[in-house]
Length: 163
Image 1 (cartoon, rainbow, N blue to C red):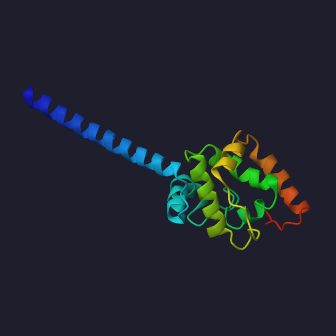
Image 2: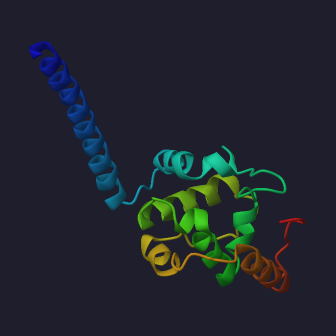
Image 3: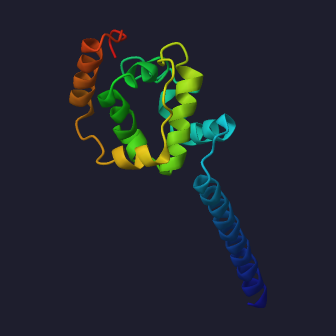
């Protein structure tokens, strides 16, 4: 009986240690989120955890299933409707990323995946802009995307077929 109690206590200690370690990691992540991660390495790490599973390591997406981020975001930011759309799609709006982290990830994607399509002098996203436009999440992404694509065409922005 004593042996089982010691074993259980030892197991509980391991669980508690794991919880403490997880809490420390979360607090560390939260502290780093409070300071805007300007470093693309940190932003790419957030991209890896929150976006890469669907959009791929280089923002390529999955043809006919998941839209690409590569080359597309640089076009979207050329109109206010497109800029708003980027942070309101469900994957961005509902992500666990803070407003600061989402701004940093979006800016990193614009630099890394969209340098040839982003307009010169592009104004980076800020945590304040993301907070202002992130909600409400889009409920009809296809319809809003079609309207954004039309606004881009009217503004003279070349768009990819099939996006």
